[in-house]
Image (cartoon, rainbow, N blue to C red; front, side, top):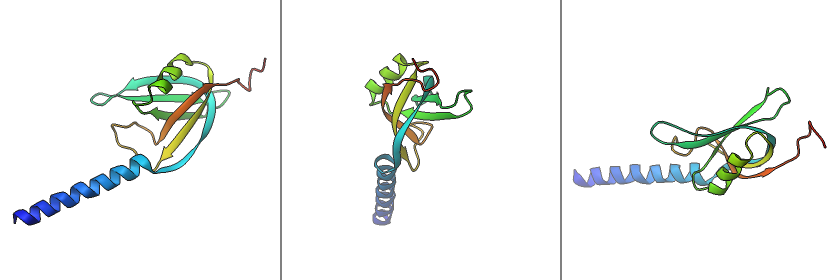
Amino acid sequence: MKKALFLTLGGVAVLFAIIYAFIYFVTFSDGIRSGELIKISRKGVIVKTWEGQISQGISGAQIFSFSVLDKDQEVIEKLQEYQGEYVKLEYVERYATFFWLGDTKYFVTSVERDQSPHFRR
């Protein structure tokens, strides 16, 4: 009886570890998006995650929501600095996410300031 319980719990733990590794390390796609950074905030009740949005349209009709992992402190600091400016985001899209990683499947890995195509100087 104890052996069956141990094997069952061990099997469940191994299955969870495989699913977690797949969701965390395997990406569905990656790419670059640009737009006006309209929001970056740390939100959540029990687990705080960094969430943001960029507006990709001239009237704010197309909003791209993204998450940032806590380990990417340089990206978070740049996003806070570039608030309200036109930015270019590099991101990876995962198949799914866990609540402690972020609200979206899109995770920003780097950010840089860019020139707005709407207001050329």
